[in-house]
Length: 80
Image (cartoon, rainbow, N blue to C red; front, side, top):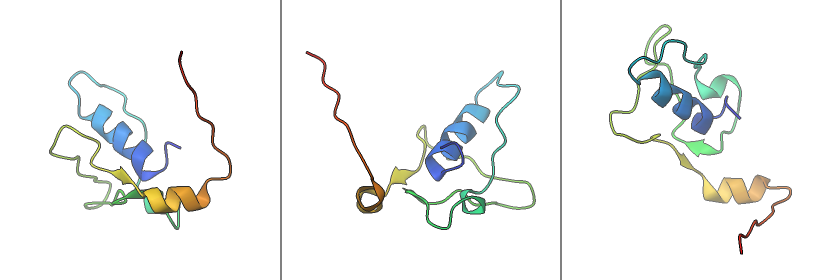
């Protein structure tokens, strides 16, 4: 989901690239979720301001325990 911390982090990383004119709307992830599947949540750094990660990464990590707890179904794809 683009509204999750992982989805918002990807949108935020893309928005920092040169010549990226129209980034997606980026919001704090707690606006959409009481519990997000990634840590840390995307937070506002000020009015209408979100700070991008300084390192070349998304800067968010899935919470494996919470993801396992909330998974309803999973599939494994293999290439042979």
